[in-house]
Image 1 (cartoon, helix red, strand yellow):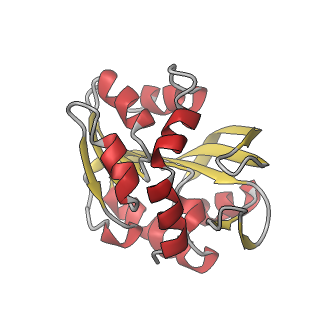
Image 2 (tube, helix red, strand yellow):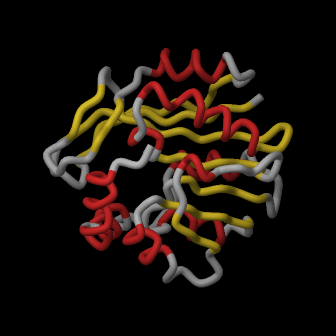
Image 3 (cartoon, rainbow, N blue to C red):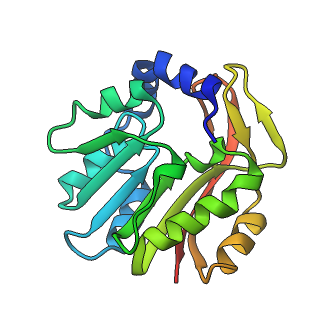
Length: 197
């Protein structure tokens, strides 16, 4: 599913978003933990890479990175990072099999309807190599809604995501929770976790 309104917001505000998330140049705790679990020089998919902030850290740490985003504006921002393989693609475009040691889905899966998440998780599971790991970041809550910028969101509980991952043979660790002000100016609760087989 492609939500044109959400993509239009990111196209228009790609530069604003880049400045918002690049205030702290150091890798987040979640990213450091994710990279520490990967084999040296492993291959990573940054799914919904935005302006490439996390992909840049992955490259600097010596990993091979494929970065994709549905927003052309975000792809244009990420394309400024030397050495980054970035392209415009949607969740349904992921056709890889046993290609990645890790997939970084940091606050990207929340833009698809709840009914479509199982199919996307199946694609991601197939794209991982045996023993590969999946990082997921989501906004915490229930239901589906649009924010004040007209972006589409699906909200999840930790228990709901843990069950979906368990049904695909994953266990969950590295749970982090918090609340931050987003691009729309609203403070929202979130969680991140690592799924591994």
